[in-house]
Image (cartoon, rainbow, N blue to C red):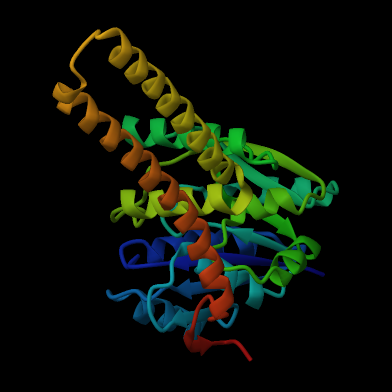
Length: 311
């Protein structure tokens, strides 16, 4: 009998824990031809999330719990779930129920047809602001223009993945993982699964603008070195501008077109412009150097404090 692992990262999700378990358990039990397990990762929650999922796990041995020592982030939580899952196929789903668990049987049918990665593609996104929809669209457009690997638009981490793909992802040692990009990078036979994304069942989003920007940065830096090439282009552009200004200054001096000693405004504009170019270039390089620094330290991506139903 084939086994399905369902990975559910949770961070301060006490409002949705019971409903999430109820709906997932109902769907998974109805799949009589499959065995299953739920791997719930408590990502350093400060509310009652851990107590609630630990009580569920004490009653239902098919529920496995990993509890982090602190909040390490959504991507680290999913990474831990991939590492500890034992199924022939692994489903990644958020606890907020925006990605309906009722879609699992249809995704399994595609898996049985031979697809190794079935990624959820949103036809619509209920309950999300125009600002978030716009920024998401621009992010994928920017990422695909910079990256050598095409990452499907309107996708998240909601997907069903074959075990052989999970094994490859688990072998990748890098930190600051951008998993939806890595799943595209490894290849294999992939297909989209279109669906209507629902509103959050309860609670508030755990992905504020700050975390969204970090995720976007991880995605761009992990899959493109074009920003580094941009630094060179800015340098050439600055040289061209400086040469134009030099020619203009010489012509002005010899032709007595104006008094250069009175050009305080133009001087300050030039200094500010070139200082901005330099600082922007340093920022881009520091992002890449920071990623190298993280890799060199070789610190674990997460620390597990407690385990339930996991040998």
